[in-house]
Image (tube, rainbow, N blue to C red; front, side, top):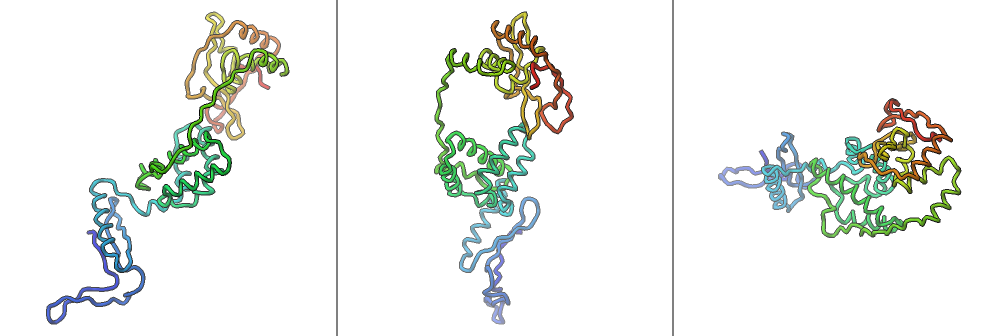
Length: 306
């Protein structure tokens, strides 16, 4: 049963039948009041309070009992886990793709752990976040990059709330202001500039410009284009894979967002792809799919292996 223990005094009944307080051997040493209760997992928990703070002890006990009844109880000991340890556990269990996990791990190591890593997650308050955010700003990091860091750290602390490590996410405080998103206007290159740029590339790499400018492919998608992806009868180009560099190793992976697509293939690009394939024969390339630790098993004849 939940109760409050007075560690300094005990109640005794005298010969006259009246109760009085007598000091215990440990009177005056350490905290006076100790709240004891059973957590939902059946384990006994305790919290100590100093002399003259009995009302605080009573209030704490009442709140604990109410939280247990409502199902919102958070074990105070759980919040002693450091942010770095919890973030590592969260990353290990994350279901995002490997490249995203590597990005988050790198950002945490570089910009988060030096300030928040050794702090118990329960000690991270809105003031802690504000100080950390100011430090990022003073480093000269762009607003866009700081927004990414805010999102990643907040996501981890949201998980800590779900796991009953902390009561609330400090990012939810009104005093926390995320860096403002500053939209940038894309300025496409002129045809003359694109043509001049293409002309300065070695001949075997010019087809990359054609695929990027003519079909709107991303870099990894350009590297992974295969003659098998071309449909000259329609004519279309199927974008079904990309090449990623993960932990120093190349892998095949789905396009961004896992979305394959078909795009129109301009006649000018089709002709240049055909000429390229005649001059530089496609090469069969075998790479792991999705994870560099997997055995290479996916093969595709790519336009160029260099």
